[in-house]
Image (spheres, rainbow, N blue to C red):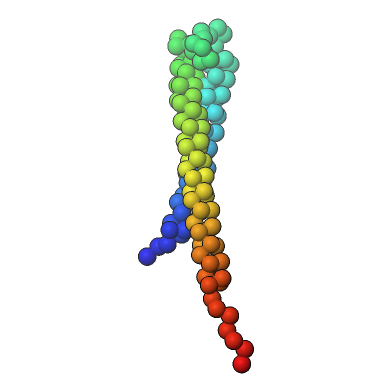
Length: 121
C-alpha cells in the first residue's frame, strides 16, 4: 500500500511533468504565431489586419500565414493557461507534503519525549 507522502511526491512529479509539457505547447504556439505573422507580412504586399492577426486570403501563402497564426495563438494561450494550472496544483501538493512532514516530526518528537529514561545498571 502506498503512503500518503509517496502519493503526494508522485503527484507533484506528475504535475511538474505536465507543466513542462504545457510550456512546450506554449512555445510551439508562439513559434507558429510568429511564423504565421512573418509569412503573411513577407509574402503579401498589403495585408488586412484583424486586431493583431494579419491576413490576405487572395494568395496561397496568405492562407498559410493565416492558418499558422490562427493555430498558434490558441496554442500559446492554452499552453500558458495549462502551465499556470499545473503549477498551482504542484504548489498545493508541496503544501500538503509540508503539512504531512510536520505532523510526522511532531509525532516523533512526542514519542521521544514520552520514552522513560532507562536506569543505568
